[in-house]
Image 1 (cartoon, rainbow, N blue to C red):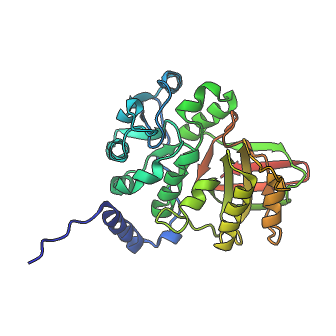
Image 2 (cartoon, one colour):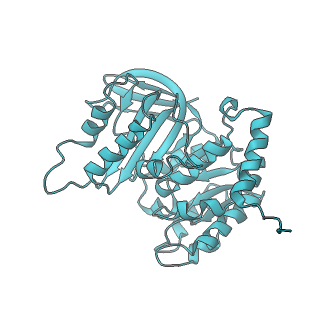
Image 3 (cartoon, rainbow, N blue to C red):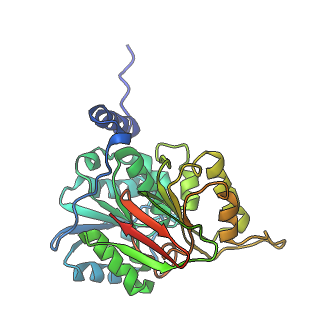
Length: 328
C-alpha cells in the first residue's frame, strides 16, 4: 500500500476557505475588518521581503507613543542575500504572529521583493478564525490581495517602519487613525486629466507590478465593481503601459467603479521617449470606460503616503476642482 500523502499548506488553506464558502458564498460575504486597536495592544513587526538597512528604533518609539506594545520578529536582524532571512524563516516569522492571538496587528518592516516567494508557506487558517490588521505597501500588496481574495479581510496600505524617519506627519497620523478606528477622509485639488464622476465601492489595489504578478494566482482578486488604487516606483513608462494593458486584456479594468492613481515615482524613460506621461497612459487605456478617474492621490512611494483601508467601502467624488474620498 502507498503511504498517505500529507496535505500541503495550500490544500489546508483551501479546505478552510471551502468551509467558509459553504456557510456563505464568498462573493456574498461582506468584508470584515479586524478589531480596531486600543492602548495596551500588541503590534508585531516582521520583515517578509527585503532585509533591513538599520534597526527600527524610530518605528518602535512611534508605535509605543501610541500606547502599543511592540514585538519584534526574528527577521528584523536576519540576512540571506538580499532577503530578511531565507523563505522559510520569513514564513515562520509571519506564521508566529498570525497564530498568536495576543498580537492584534502585524506591520511589515519594509517591502522590496520577497513576499511572493514565501506566502504559500504560510497557513492562514488561524487568521480566518481570528483576523488581525496587516499593514504595509509596495511588495506587501501580495498579502493585501491574498487576504482579500481568500478571506475577504480588510488590511491597511500605509507607511512601514523603514519609511517612518522620512514620512510626513499627516501620513503617520492617518496610519494611527486607521489602526484605532478613527474616520478617514481625503480631499485634494483635481488633476487636469481627471475624469469627473461619483461612485462607491470596495477599495482594492496596491502596487501595480505586484497586482500583475499575482494575476491568475490564488492571491488574485475580483475587480468587478471595485474602486481600484494603483501606484508604483522605479518603472519604465513602457512597462507601466504594458502592465496596465495586461490588466485590461484580462478584463480587470472594464467593470471598475472607479480608478485612483497614486504616486508613480522615479519613473524612467528610454533613449527614444515613450511619448506619454503616466496620466496620459492611464487615460488612453481606460478611455472607453465611464467610471471616475483621479490622479496624484497622496499614497505610494512618497513621504505623504496616506493610509488606505483595502476591503472597506469608499465614496469617491471626482469634480472639476477637487477630489473627495471618504471611507464609510
